[in-house]
Image (cartoon, rainbow, N blue to C red; front, side, top):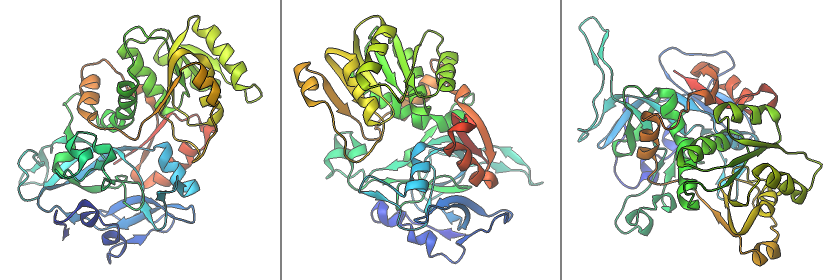
Length: 398
């Protein structure tokens, strides 16, 4: 087992070449499943998704080794695999590990780590006590006093952030993951690894709700009933939005939204209607003026529909990720004093997400519709990428 020391900046500590150039690293052939090794799911510039064998590093000072027990497949994981990039700054240029929605158990701690405990074994090799159960926050900022973003608490804007699974840094969809001890969040005993993994998309939704200024009783439009849209629906209901209208291209997803929040009002989007026509149907469904839209698709036509749906002085808050350049109806926005706002990842949301799940205010359990073993990760990606499979959230367990 190779030791990794937490010295220098994070980009050096988690330099992807340490894995790619390691003698234990190799791409596994189809059907090749070695026993008791660090298996991970990687994509590459040739748009291939496959399993690899990678080294199991020993934690250095300030680090822990986590046995990753549950990881969800995010839309960005699929996008990096199939398209090789998101925008101009996040580009797949080599083999890159996937996954950033993860939870697991601490199995080893490095020097100076006192807040986390590892599992204990009896003399017969059986486990006497489990290690601490944690949700993994995948974005690791520099945390230096000279960094304005970190010092002011908006660490999602840290220019030196290492975000696991965003190229070039390898992700958390692996058996054993090395992580800074201070960027883990304890899971209560009654919160499952599945729920801990889902705290990552919940953190995205909570960050959007915070920045958008949603208040008790606000009429709300949610565009898109994919995983982020559905998590946003659950969080918005917990925050007291009423009424809530949600849109999607697929009736099955709207039906799923209705099963989560029976009072939600649904609008099926047709590809043949204009955004203005769609907006009129949304207004009819709402039966009142909409103060806020949380746009969870990043699709230009959906953003236009949101813009035409909200009231004078309303806000369209865009959570979704879309094309690098888009056109907006400028004068409609201007003449109606409609604010358009965005977010980039999240900051300071994980503790709140865990409290909401642990306290029963948000039930994430129904969102996991498909489960695969780690060795089946390639199949899991194909299911997640195929809308006809009806998956909401695909998770990989180990």
